View 1 (cartoon, rainbow, N blue to C red):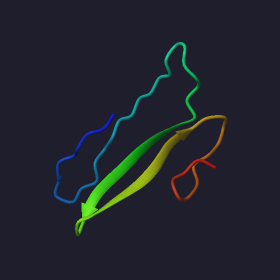
View 2: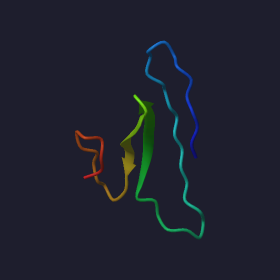
View 3: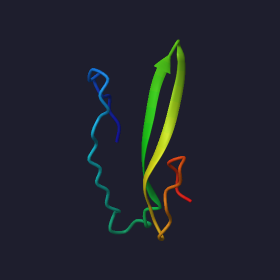
Length: 65
């Protein structure tokens, strides 16, 4: 649940994501990757939805509709 990626000469990282709900837990609503970075001393984040439940789709802003 988190980690830092080392710089890779400007190439985008390739991620493999797997998720499973706990046997006695609630169903999963979505799978997300949260990108966080610091630029000029300010923190930023961008959220990417990778998968959505109930047949929903991912819109052009990378979020579940």
